[in-house]
Amino acid sequence: MPLHRKHGNIRVNDPRLRVWNDRPILTGDYVVYWCQANRRAVDNVALEYAIKRANELSIPCVVYEAVRPDYPHASDRFHTFLLECGRDNARVLAERGIAHGFFLPRTAQEARGVAAKVFERAALVVSDDHPSFVFPWQNQAGARHAPCAFLTVDDAAIAPLALIPAHESQARTIRPKLLALLDEWLAPVRPIEPRVRGELDWPFDPVDFARDKIPALVRRCAIDHAIGPIEDRVGGSRAAWARLSNFLARGARGYDEGRDDATSDGTSGLSPYLHFGAISARTCALAARDATLPKPAFDAFIEQLVVRRGLAFNHAIRDPRHATYESVPQWARDTLAAHAHDERPGAKPPAVLERARSEDEVWNAAQRELVTRGRIHNVMRMFWGKRIVTLVKRPRDAFEFAVRMMDRYALDGRDPNTYAGVGWCFGLHDRPFPERPIFGTVRPMGLGALKKRFDINTYVQSIP
Ligand SMILES: Cc1cc2nc3c(=O)[nH]c(=O)nc-3n(C[C@H](O)[C@H](O)[C@H](O)COP(=O)(O)OP(=O)(O)OC[C@H]3O[C@@H](n4cnc5c(N)ncnc54)[C@H](O)[C@@H]3O)c2cc1C
Image (cartoon, rainbow, N blue to C red; front, side, top):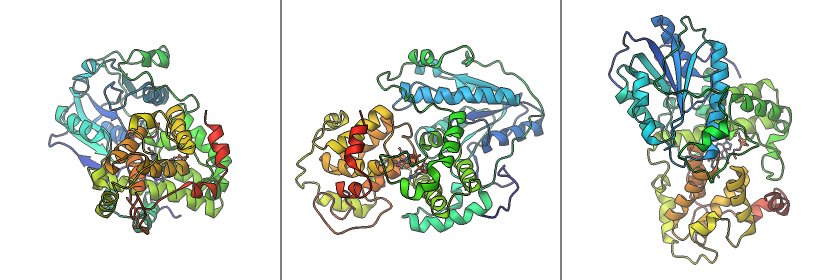
């Protein structure tokens, strides 16, 4: 894979940059990097861009990070992971000599107006571009409140999302475009030395990670305490790097075959870290390339990390309704509507299904895995989502239930991959198949597909 660039940092007219208001860069006291979607302190294009602009203005760059209690599905599970990301960022930014303020309001009331105060004396605010969840409207609000220019940097996938202007309908159409862009965009991000250092008198009491214990911090927030943290998935860049190197040393060499076995540890487990931006897809791809994996394993990993993930982000950026049933293609909604009244013998109310009380033991195990471990293996997610089409009475309700479960329980939920993954179960990024009950011409998936890949009983028994 040739590299035409020395590094992945921002250049003039970079397609990753987006301007959100029409205010100028001011003679302010600092440049703020508002760290929202990419919770990492190295290999972060937006952060390095903020440092570069601060250096040009001879003022410090400061990093503002916050976790509000009122994002959808806020719970101990996600707050803990986010704070663990913040703890790593605090350490790395201190080493780099960059001021870092982590704001953890207990209530929505306490959060009100604080970002605007942080931006008050800024020359420029830089943040993360991201097409899903709360980020589009948070950036709109940020741009309104900033007295100065408000810019975002798209560092979500490896190549800038703007470079693929079409709304791609399938992996085969986007694959050649994404793979061709790797030649230019797959390059490490060079850390920039801050020329001016300075502390900020934050308009809140910043979390002190050396003093404050994360469980105690989480307990005092007005969030859902019934959904607990996942102990074997510690958040943050340090854990992300450890997971990546462990994967490359073990499962990655047989990834092309091992990834389909839900009873083995054959996949990377990186999705929560990619979702919260504790590690970049760029770093994962570069490390996989340097690990000189066997070609089938490397190609299979790039297919997921670059092509499938890129397809999901393309869908999210090109369709603002991507988290809703309206984003399912018309042909698929039509055929599902035509079969909406087909008999569904195992159907149950969503509240019963949420407690993993269907009549299907395999589906129940996948649902338990989601609720208790905050994840489901990819093959089981496909089965789980397809089975929901038959377990919930109306197709739209089934879609909404699947999204709600992922967003509420999955560490990697609330992501373009969530909506594309659930959408695929309803026909997104797919083609029609021979017609059958309930699914119409949407591709079905039954237990047979799992039985070919691994021993289902071993899987069911492994989930408490
Ligand atoms: C119904 C359903 C819901 C899903 N919900 C989510 C979700 O909420 N969040 C999420 O990140 N993924 C989701 N996926 C996609 C996929 O299941 C997960 O990305 C994968 O299981 C994560 O495990 P891993 O990190 O070990 O993946 P690996 O196999 O190690 O792959 C490496 C990375 O490639 C990307 N990737 C892998 N498979 C896919 C895929 N099919 N589509 C897009 N990107 C992929 C992920 O970023 C993943 O971390 C969903 C799939 C389905 C069918």
